[in-house]
Structures are given as C-alpha cells and as structure tokens.
Image 1 (spheres, rainbow, N blue to C red):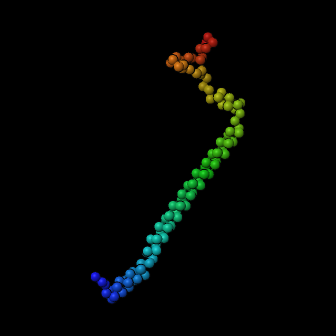
Image 2: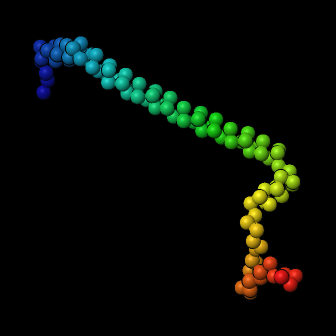
Image 3: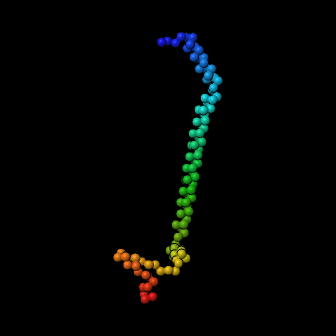
Amino acid sequence: MSISYETQTKIVRYIGQFLVDHADELFAVEYSAEIAAEQEKIRAQGEADATKIKAEAEASANELVAKSLTSELIENNKINKWDGKLPYIQGSDATIVDVGNIGGK
C-alpha cells in the first residue's frame, strides 16, 4: 500500500503547521524539565554545602574543646556533677558492695 504524493504533501504541511502553531508549547515543556532539573541540582548542592559547613563548624568546636581540656578541668567537672552519693558496685557474683560502708561507716 502506498500513499499518494498529494496525501504525503498534506501530511507534511499539516505537521509543519502543527509545529509552527505549537512551537512555544513544545519548547516550554522541554525547557521546564531543564529548569526543574537545574533547580533540583541547585537545591542538592545547597544542602551539601550546608552539611559541609555544619560538619566543619562542629570539627572546629571539637578541636577547641579538646585543646582546652586539662586534668584539673575534668576533675572540676566531676566534682560539680557529683550528687554526693557514693556508688554501689556490683561484683561478678551479683554481690552489691556499698562503697560508702567501706572503712566501717
């Protein structure tokens, strides 16, 4: 089955006219997908940058804390956090030893 030259010409003209009439819509669809992809790329890069900045800030803070720690500061923190109660120690045989009673108290 063959299509006549006249029918082929009509089809080509119809397609050509369709493309002319709808070129803006066709390009808009193509460009809107590109724009959405670019926006997603920018959003992802922004999140990555924010994560990196936060990690760098935490690393710097940790470094400053590590440099400022001294045995005196650690002992002072222990003393300030102590509730005044002596600890109970549980041995391997489930015996609980009250450290407060050591020494005859």
